Length: 263
Image 1: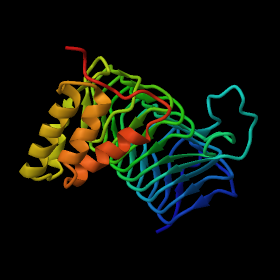
Image 2: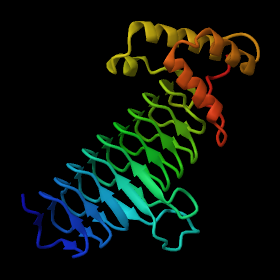
Image 3: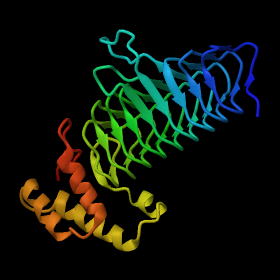
Image 4: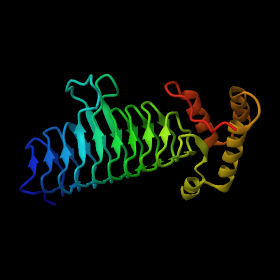
């Protein structure tokens, strides 16, 4: 399959273009860009910097990819943006390069759906299957597991970690780490488990029942949180998903843990 480039597009001769790439009207593609097979830039798309876009990703109008990080210390260093396969980027999406003092790369996985005007900041790591609704944004250095859903206009604080198969409510200001399989409400507080997501992902009834018991004991039990943490670790040590949540909690060192509202 041949590459298709609209006559109004400006594409550097040094850019790497895979088979079947389509570049529509008024797009600009810089010299360090790599577009893999089947990538489609519909129109008015800007791809700059050391940006790679995985196969079969579709990029809608007025998307800006690979511009410098929104960091006043950035001085044009050679950093990167890596976007995986099969993503859909709707109108006005922005994703920035990494920073030299950070990871040096911003990385987005496969199969994501990024709705209009969503934003991924510098040095973020976003897993596969992310869904960011309209206007959802994240600051620098955010880490996101697989299959996370972000409600519209949600805002993720820099350095926050979000575990896999979780959900952030619309308009939520998420200031702390959200556990795997968790759900943050519209105020950015932990509000139970993402039960619908767990069922849709095929988790067994036994696993979900164990996770619900673990959640109640850890977040709503009596006594000091640190003591409850050790108690539930011993009680549910045979559940891999519980072990995953416990490891996530113990690994946190930059942001506080997202907790339920005080009762």
